[in-house]
Image: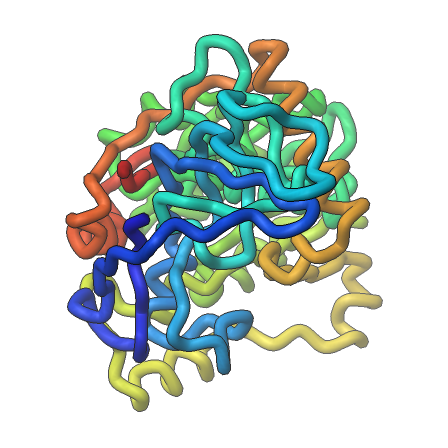
Length: 339
């Protein structure tokens, strides 16, 4: 099998491709011959050594999602047969051409979806489902603001919000991305720039019920101030702390960390608003929570209620190029590695 290994955190050269014998499935495990693996911004942070859930685990293989074909079953494994086309999630290890997975972490690929499409599903859609359903408790008719609306999690949030009956305002980084946000369900789209909040106020003049923000620095406070009574600010990332396209200097990280706004319990109570955050990787170990989210995603995809996002594929040998592209901020949809 082929897999990417990060022996020590670092730059793009830290993504080392190795070839090893195929592992055999153990009791209750399903072996999947992966055709594609999803690439997420969290993988960049893992490579650089700043991802909390990866501390102490190096050397490790990045990646949280994959799609492929079942080619072997361990003793006692059930629910799948050799030859089944499946997609699944994993807590690290996704950048590998062979996966050993428990059946609970796999689902059958929906009709009409290929491996790259399905490898782009689990991480972003589970993040979106947890943010909307378990954290924000989004209700029909609510008005939601989605930052980075043309990206992987952004397009997932827009689609699922529409399924839940919500109205969405999407924020994108350039005019070229507005059509993507609208295609995936945004009722209004705002291009990030000097007049960002004026444009958001025009799109949602009565305020916002929930905001989904992975910027983590400059947009948190202005967003919080635009929440209605009972509004929720949901934070699931801190992309602005990390500079684009290079490893940060420690003083730079410290300065960006200091710029993150603080919210006191007194302020939250007086304003009758909430600030909530989560890291979805830690939640994959909560079996019932993961099952509920994954079941919903698989069902919606099978019913045709989720659209395929634009996918840009890189052969696994070009994993570093995939990271460079993601760090540029110019991509839309999802990136995947292919085997």
